[in-house]
Image 1 (tube, rainbow, N blue to C red):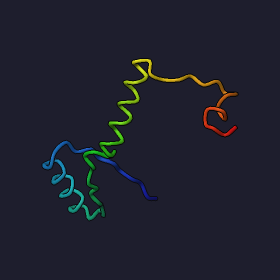
Image 2: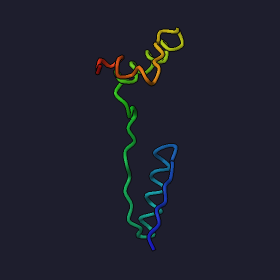
Image 3: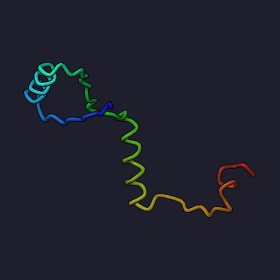
Length: 74
């Protein structure tokens, strides 16, 4: 039976202790690097701008039967 254990160390000291423990028990493991910013900053800026535009009332409501016209498909 294979199980997976996920740990969330808070600093490098905890990482080193976990690695030493795993090595002492001869348990195979990998250490994944966490990305500091998983999203492109330009993408995040666009999303935040869209959220602000919505708060400011800068949006258009479209009825379901008008979607094709709005998209220029008619």
